[in-house]
Amino acid sequence: MTRTLRSYLLLMTAPAVAVLALLAIASAPHQGSDPALLALLVVLGALAAGFPVVVSPRYKVDATPAVYLACVILFPPATAVAAIGLSRALGDGALCLRIDPTTGRKGRQPIDLIFNTSQLMLAGAAGAITYHALPLLWGAVGAAAVMYTVSTALVVTAAGLQTSRSPLQIWIDAASADISQTAALYVAGYLLAMLAGGRPWLAAVMMVPVAGVQLSLKRSVQLTEQTIKAVEAMADVVDRRDPYTFQHSESVARHAVTIARQLKLPDHEVEVIRLAARVHDLGKIAVPDEVLHKQGRLTPDEFELMKKHPETGADILAKFPEYKRGRQLVLAHHERVDGLGYPHGLAGREITFGARILAVADAWDAMTSDRPYRKALDPAIAIAELQRGRGTQWDSDVVDAFATTFPGAAPAESASWLDAGRPLLRSLGAAVGALAG
Image (cartoon, rainbow, N blue to C red; front, side, top):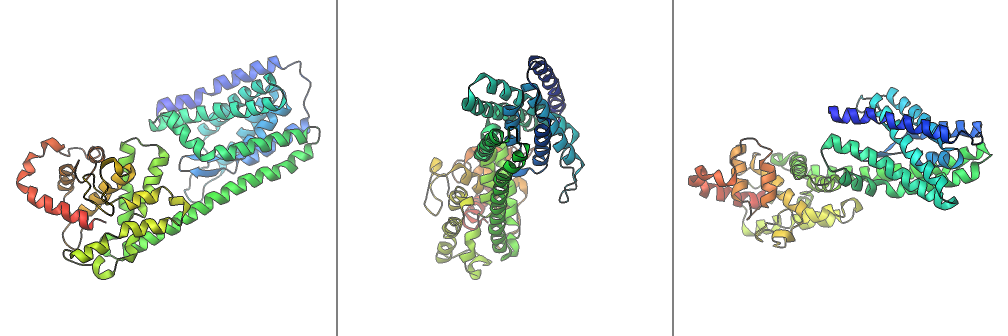
């Protein structure tokens, strides 16, 4: 964690405390709140915070928005903000003590507790002010929108400081992952507030549908993860058919992610590319062993069989919604920017950008791995071959981005020392185009 990020997380407490104090002064004349209902919502919020659902590698959601909106509607601003802060502190405090059995790490770090509590208090304050400034239902809608906007804005700013990426792009990724579930939780929170006023026991009853939303999201995420694992297991079986391609897809996925990160693509695009890379050779399940394991050069008929594997893979992936976009990358990962690839002879921008990334990652792993027809190339030679083919076989921007991850790699215009070996490199390029992956 950088010093700037740590300072940002810690300094968030100052405005949160200041806002709470100002609201306490402004709301002093207000009538007291129902202590039983207040205590119950604090406990329910703490429990909800203790069971987050991971919806993406960097983003988690929980059922607390429903409880926090109910607090904003039911109580004076200062009371609502204090309840939100106390509830979150209790929930994250419990996570600080909980050890994840899979990673051996704590569910939360103390600095996370401080930041989460502070930013949610600020979001709650903004929501409370909005709610009391607007009439009835519009106030609730406005409060929910403001709370979501303020909270996510503060979180994505922290994420931007951590990853050096645009907070706006991170926000777009996060919103696409959780906006529908969060909206449902805010609706449940409004209903909770409307029914629980003066009847604390109804607040507990209303948490049942809130828990249902949370459980539905969790089941959906689990089903998606299980489907992806099953498809990737099939792809790994295909890789294991040939000892030379063992773990090939995993390696291609790592290189593809490296390129995508270097090009500063959004998280959701990186994930689509990673998923496609992990299963890009799935279609080879239909390629006969005598072709797949052949030691020498493929005959024209054998090559025609090999050229069908992108379409076969895309057809298999069409059955799974999780690969709705990734299947297009699998279909086109053997296309060339000069139009001489397969299966459809696409050229330039006709080839989706993710597929152009896969093509470079696939070629690199093929060149730097032992194959039946040759030994693995030295990385410097493989980089030089990629640079030789930039703009013809592979996308120039993608090759350049990958080359920059290897300090000392010769730039394309400085590769004159390889002129004498270009015939050999052209042969290697043709072999990679025919047999990569």
